[in-house]
Image (cartoon, rainbow, N blue to C red; front, side, top):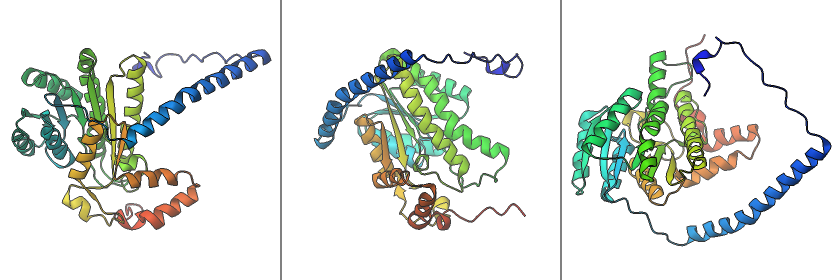
Amino acid sequence: MQNVFDSGKVPYEAAPIPKRRSFDESIMFYLLVVKDVLIVLLIAIPMLVLKLITNLLPGSDKNVAGQLALVTGGGNGIGREIALELARKKCNIAIADVDCEAGENTVKECVSFGVKAKFFEADVGDSDEVISLRGRIEKEMGFVDILVNNAGLMPLLSMREGTAPEIERIVHTNFFSNIWTCRVFVGGMIERKKGHIVCIASASSIHVMPRASIYTATKCGIAGLMGAFEEELRGEGYGFIKFTTVYPYFVSTRKDLIEALNLRFPAITAKETASATVQALLRNQKDVAVPSYLFFLSKFSKFFTAEVQQLIRDRIFRERYCLMTPYKGYN
């Protein structure tokens, strides 16, 4: 691996110019590519048909009873509801949060379902605290089988608003926390040859959200991180570790946030989001949007020109009227 701290300090050495293929080599290259495309089609068509049949028929959910799930940001909102939903499935729960009172309350509710549950105070945006968190959880509860990365902050900030420490706090909580927990807990999953990583991204990962530029960037980062990390592990032979990325629309969690918005489409509840998340986890779904129709609407809009996409934003989503007031800091 390149030493990133050497950048700019050691002489730059340019890579050699790629050698151009001869005519014969080019013909052979494209013939091999066509051959591989045909092989993929022959294999993919039966796979797609099987997937369609599987989706149409009622499938069985995997059993998570007795497994240990770590839910970050599990004291309130989506994290709390996910923890309770998993507890109903008889999954043991570890809650990590900076809100001790809320975290302890979630634990009490989880225990009422007859499972083991414990609260761990931790700022998962700090890599050292995540390493410490793993040690405490493994000592007191055992190994983590299901990692639910839910911790997040959503302030409505323009790209030009907020102090540097505030922006760093958002990025550390929303994005870096996912890196630290994945790095720290995946080793145990590899050793035990089982595990599931869930990350709560956002509909803004698909349909970018103005007036929340930093938040949107972190959620797009989560989507990219999950996709790349899954392929990294699959390429190394660890495809038994499952990944689920969740893309919820505006969730009615904080009262001040919902009151500050004038949404065209109604906000969804934390319970709806949690239910869809756990259902996707139990069925090993890679991606899930809540609600699904907004996911497809946003994807569909990408087929149009930039001008048409902006028209969709203005006329269908009405973003100009729902995301607070424009930035007033400039002259």
